[in-house]
Length: 383
Ligand SMILES: C[S@@+](CC[C@H](N)C(=O)[O-])C[C@H]1O[C@@H](n2cnc3c(N)ncnc32)[C@H](O)[C@@H]1O
Ligand code: SF4
Image (cartoon, rainbow, N blue to C red; front, side, top):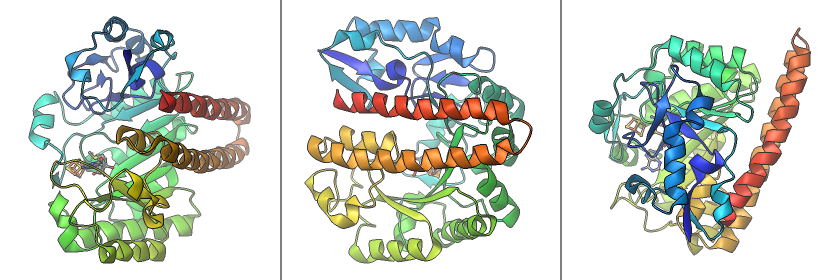
């Protein structure tokens, strides 16, 4: 039996933290396994560099680094050949533009994260160089603009979003926020025009339950900003997905609290997803866990499934395999239907301009990527 690292072999993703260090996973909050540093080196060189090779070899010799042993992305396999089929370059990157935060949520060890980072904010110049670099990678498609910290606390975040959309139109941009700072029409306009998906982390539907986890936050303010963005989306006919990610804890899982969230999400037109988490210890919902109870229609239809993390969440938590394969398949097909439509729409807009030839080429790549991604994710889930 061999252990196997999804991120480092399959290219699920790497994370780039605020000071430019590249680490093998967003889980590696303390950079135990640093692979290299951008923008001094390109991501291609880092992915194929000595540090990455060394770690992969440790897996091949069946002696993974200690830091990997508790990683949720480790899977087991009897087939050693899987440890030699490394993808050319990653197709997803977590990019931490900012490691500071205006909130103090219970799971986030703010002090430890900030002690670790050489600089808590990535400069706009470095950011642009990273985007230009990512844009050259053959399979690269998904940029996740958060890791640890609040991205909208970065003074240049709106310039970063504009730069990305203008220079890398076929990279899908995802961002997650506590929602406290997107509070003007001008900011909302930029977000609606540049991002593919924005997640609002709002864990509750009342001030009392919300504040138990999101210390320093304010439910009404975060909710109002999300609702205002949904309004801007309608006015601008934007295709952005606005997701309300509601982590289920023991203090916010009552029928009443959850029903209120459903009604609020329907009224504002945002996508509400429940996320079952076992983090931090002792806070877990007893009512909803990833096991047979997810058959409850209310939970299953709104379960957080966005690939790959929502889907991997099912696997990690030992959800009944028959069930997670069925649920995961639905999540993937919904996701790719949206993904393909969005690229077609963007292509249409761009091809009215001068760069239609390049766009057509990139759009074909996007379709190829989607097919490849489905195949890889499916094989990863089966291990
Ligand atoms: C560390 S946060 C950083 C981005 C931003 N500050 C936010 O809160 O959305 C990244 C993601 O982790 C999620 N998250 C926070 N606490 C979590 C927990 N205990 N279990 C699972 N996910 C969590 C958030 O909802 C968010 O989508
Ligand atoms: S808002 Fe996000 S980054 Fe800030 S403490 Fe909470 S989870 Fe961590």
